[in-house]
Image (cartoon, rainbow, N blue to C red; front, side):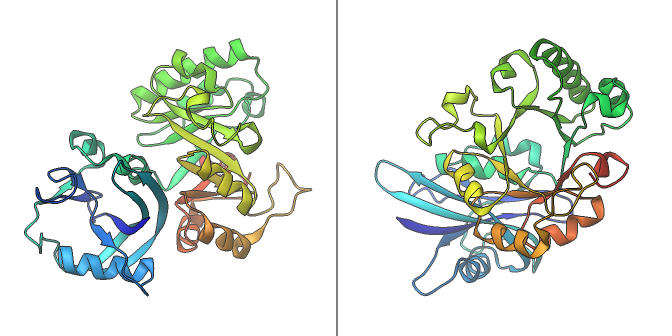
Length: 318
């Protein structure tokens, strides 16, 4: 197994840096995220800093783990430890003569990457905040109207409506998907993976960890297309590992703090949250008692960001 580090590097304008592989190298001519082999005796973080200095002439000053990807080519197996870099010193350039370009996130699909980069491409565009709707009865019964007043450009929103029967959920999901498409937002289905084909513009499905089958089944058994995201609700380190093994694109970890919706349940606390996230191999969102002011702390502890219901849409901690 070849151990490699890779970096999703953001500039202040929100663009992402990619580089073109030299023609004489393995999969030459394709585009990739900067990085390289982890040397013996070197940590992944040390390799990240060194590789970016050698390849791009920059020094990473703010970065955090994003995900781990294992991919098996015909001629080799690769383990990619991927970091998100949000601050650096110096001006990025192709220090080894390689072409580089800063790309808007929505334009990454215009470039051809090695197959091992597919999960990285999906993780690269994750938002800082992941929204989950309250149940329809919690907002007076008209969830669509409630969302009309709140959905904004760039939001990722999971439609959580466990109280609805499947036909009613499908109708609401189609309406919410149309709203999100108009607002340039993205909607996810909760639990109903089988409905994805009937909901245009849906980004994927969010499942509780106990809904997963065997690792051998993975995403294909759920009927997910390659572009769909698989999100898993987790509550401990073992479940985070299971989510990664099943091919989840990201996970929520909860409850971090006590919430008004589940006052009987103690939160795991930020310290335990950070310890479990440090061992995770996929992007993780902190869930439970979150407000948008918690984003910096969650990211400091290695999370992608935060997830929540009413506390993020506006209201109390839920």
